[in-house]
Length: 106
Image (cartoon, rainbow, N blue to C red; front, side):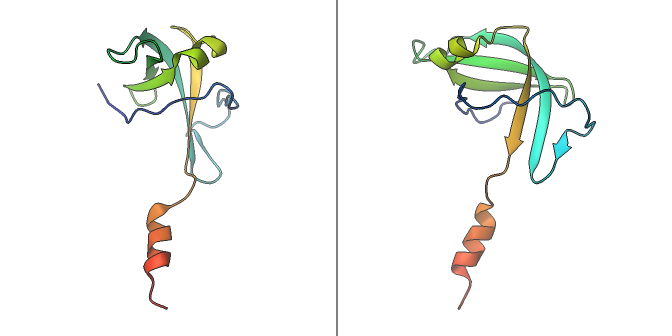
């Protein structure tokens, strides 16, 4: 099973609709949209009163993605096992490029 770095999701951020018209799931800029289905919601061994672990099946990659969310945001969003969701991955800035610019001789 593919393990990914755990990130916290925020339910108050906009939800990206399912990407019907783009077979490669790519859009302008550096963004990827993946459609998936929540297959499991588990309680982590530590901080069980604060977090829930989601396992999401992504058919395009044939892999599972695991994420940890705040329990109150998961309840507020109404997400549960079997729900179809979209995952938006967007590059905010390029650290390597920024570092090169800062270290460039002047």
